[in-house]
Image (cartoon, rainbow, N blue to C red; front, side, top):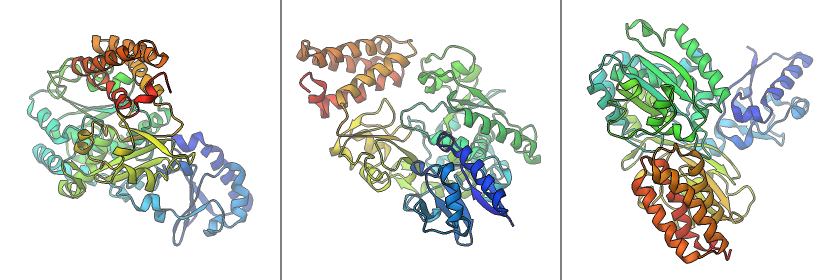
Length: 513
C-alpha cells in the first residue's frame, strides 16, 4: 500500500503555503520514484505549526511543523518517509503532542485525521452513526437525548439546545426550518471555520438530525462571506451526501426528508444575531427583530425555526451516537460537555483547544497557549469576542464555565480568547469597542446606533483631558443606558469591555497615560 503524506487544506495552512508545499512534495515523490500518496486533510488546530506535514509510519503519524516548500528536499534527504524524528522541525508522533494529548476532543475528534470531503473516511470514524440512530427514533426521543446531554448553544447566549428544539417540535406548522448560524465574526474565533473546512459531514449530520427532531425538511447554512474555502468544501460535501443518500427525500431509505444548502452572508457582524440573520436570509437588510415572538415560533419566512450555531449542531452527532449522558459526563455545573476554545492574539501557541468545562483561564493560556508570543508579561485577555470584557490578572483563575464567567461580569461567548501583553493601550481598546459598535450596529435602535457614536466621542474627550471627570461620569451613564435600552446584545454588551477598562485599567483611559 502506498505510504500516505498528509498536508492540510484549511484556510490557515493555505495562507501559509500549503498548496505550494503539496506541489513540492509531489515533485519530490516523482523525482525519487517513491510509492507515496498525498492526502489533503484538515487541521489539527495547532495553528502555530501550520502547514503541518504528517507522515504515516508503523508507529503512527509523525509530524513536521511549519514546513515551507523550500524545506521539502532536505526533509526527504533526512528520511522523512522513514519517520526520522531527528530533523529540527519534527514534533514526533502527532497524537502524543502535549497540546493535543491533554484535550478532550468530542467535536473535533476527526479534525486533521481525515480527508474532509471523503464520506468513506467519515464513516470509518463513527460518522453518520448518530443519524442512523436518530432515524430509528421518535422525534421526541431525539429531543430528549439532546436535553439529557445538557448541550447549550455554543454561539454565545448559551441557551439550552433541547428546550429550543422542544419549542419548535411543539409548534404546529406544515413547514419548519433548520438554520445554521455560520457567520463567525467574533475576534479571535475560528472553531466554526475549522468544523466546516476539516469535518463538514459532521455539520451536515447534526443539522439533519435536528430536522428529524422537529419535523423540519429544509435547512440553510448561513455562511460568512469571508470563508471561501469553507464555502467550497461545504458545497462539495453536501453534493456527496446527496449522492450517498444522507440528504434528500429518502434519507438512507427511511422515507424521511431533509434538504440542505449554503447561503452566503451579507458581510455584517450584526447578522450573527439570529433575527438579523433570518432577515438577511430572506433577502432583506439584516435588522434585529423585537422578541417575542421567538424564532422558534415565528422564524424564517414566519415559520418555526431552529437557529443554532455550527458548534451546537456539530456536537449533536456525538450525542446521538454515544448518548446524551455520555456527553453530559464531561463538564461542571450547568455547563456540560466540551467547549472548543480558540487561542489568538499575542500568544505563542495559537490554535484550537477542545476541553471539558472546568479548566481555569490561566491554565488554558499557560499550559496550552505557552504564554505570549513576545515573551512579555500578559496584561489582559478578552474572552467572548469584541463584546466581551477585558479580564485582568485577578480574574485569570476563573473557571471556564458559563456561570463562573457571569459571576465576574464576563462572557464565554463563542470561546474566543484574545491575549494582550503589557504593551497594549487599554484605553485604545476601550475606544475600539465603542467604535466597533458604531460601525457594525444595524441602526434599528437608538441606544446602540447613537450611544456608540457618542461613546467614541466621550472616550476621545476623556483621553484628551477635556473635562475628564464630568465625561467619565457621562460615559458611565451612557454605558448603563446602552445595556438597559438596546434591542439586542450588540448595543447591550458593547459597554462590557469599556466598563472593564474603566474598572481595572482606569489610568489607561485617562489623559495622563
